[in-house]
Image (cartoon, rainbow, N blue to C red; front, side, top):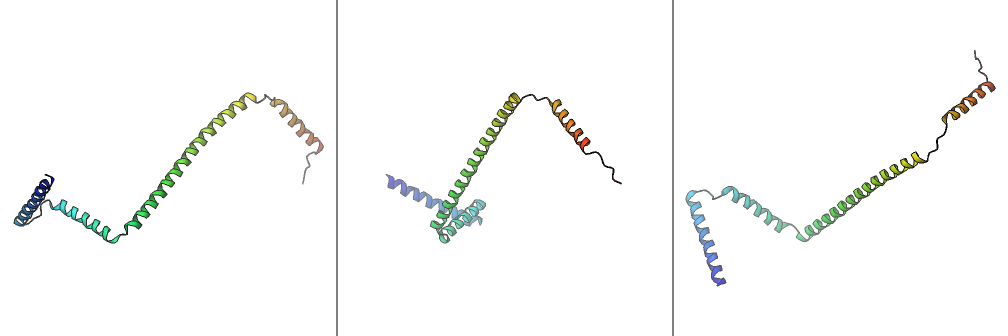
Length: 134
């Protein structure tokens, strides 16, 4: 049964081809000319590639490029993850330190410090009086 189907399919394809070439010869134009021209260019390109390119070297180079790209993308992704974690931890530590510094810092009287500096400055003036240089 399969042989009969294969023979009938081949016969139908041959008759279709014959009718198509007869129709094109009678009309003087190609049927679906733009589509067939595009398909012809693609077939010529594939034939050229198969005839002139070393497929094993091409495959090896393609796999090397693919492995390089995967390594680059994974390194880039891991760097982005590390930077995101770093930003999160930096914010967390900054917030924690701000809370610590606000809660722990003792209240120093700034007025006493300013008074000490003023007294020191005045003592320097008494020890070294202003000299008028003329």
